[in-house]
Image (cartoon, rainbow, N blue to C red; front, side, top):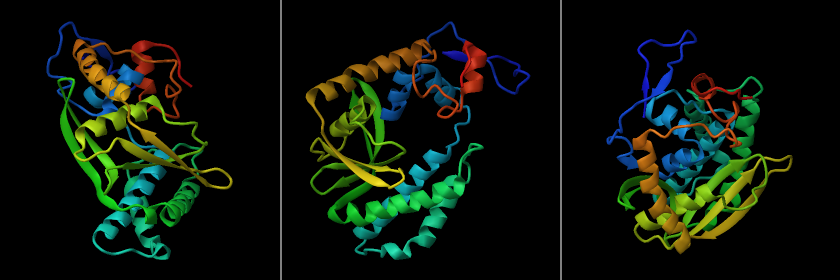
Length: 273
């Protein structure tokens, strides 16, 4: 692992150095997001989950989280026997937006008001066209168990009465399909969620000039599940051995997507735009 030096750098950042001994306490419990983060950039996993550096949400992420929370609130009302009028959700949206943006770190070129308005529009599109067709069984369902001998936990956004997982994302571009990181997450839930049928429906709300909704269906395969069984123990092994290094080839290695760029360049060198 890395261990912080005694004195912080002049910039206020703490320089981290490789430790010489294996740490058996790290990675005791993993999640799909932690594993995917480590596989994409092990240095990023270290800075966030072990060094504990701040990782505030940016503009697009704040919008996505706010949309999720509004949709979750709407489905919880459904489970309670009510169906709120979409026209009446303005105050709820304002409250959710304030909560999600309270600790955010907006970029200088972020149009915060525009993000809020587009989030409201995308939420409405989903609630009007997709949500009424779903029979919810649970939201933010916590799952836990062992995969490959590793303790794994996660939270399923929405599962319906048939055991199908429903997920929702916001994006600036039309998606081309299901990414390997999302397939890994779904394969995890397939194994840990009681009653899961292995099917998933991902709705992407695309914030183009004319907003659109893209639905992608996915069936978890045996190969997907095998990947989780092989990768979770290897991720834990890498974490405990302290094998942390940046992935400069990742599109996420950017100041737009990563809050750890200053700490990372200080530790590993190179420049990040």
